[in-house]
Length: 233
Image (tube, rainbow, N blue to C red; front, side):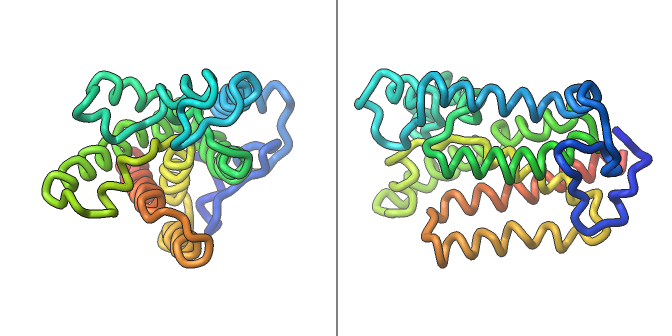
């Protein structure tokens, strides 16, 4: 971790994608070394799009590309129907995206703003672990939540909807990293309030699913707590 970082003095400790932790100019070689996780993740997700195209949250029978990506996306039902697939897909669903808006959201706002800023401050290993841990915490939590919820409320449209589609993409990873980055903010509460306001806008104006908003907000809070523990240690 880079402890000598003036970003702590700022409310939003973001850095430009082509610069170092203090927004200083760095060489191309330094950029590759300091932001290797961000670069690798972008290469992987855009390569998948180039080879397989976009995935689908519901249409799994149109082409073999759609079927393959559905097989490796996160399905809530797999917790009870195929537990090993449920576990496997926690490590694969983060690389799949279902549309241009989806992958641009993750790539531009997520990686080029949040993730690479965190990475150049905290290091690639810490950033990668925090990003990936979202799929080992938030994802299984909601998997259990919806399965248990459906057991007790079998007629709930909210619970049933979670089983009607798959869930994919890098957004919960990026929000978890964003929450972790808030530990470097002069006013963490301001940073942490932004995803809440963003999701309220998504719900009331864009009509996004509440399920997605809940995952994003939980990932943000969990990222902050995880990083706060590491910083305090």
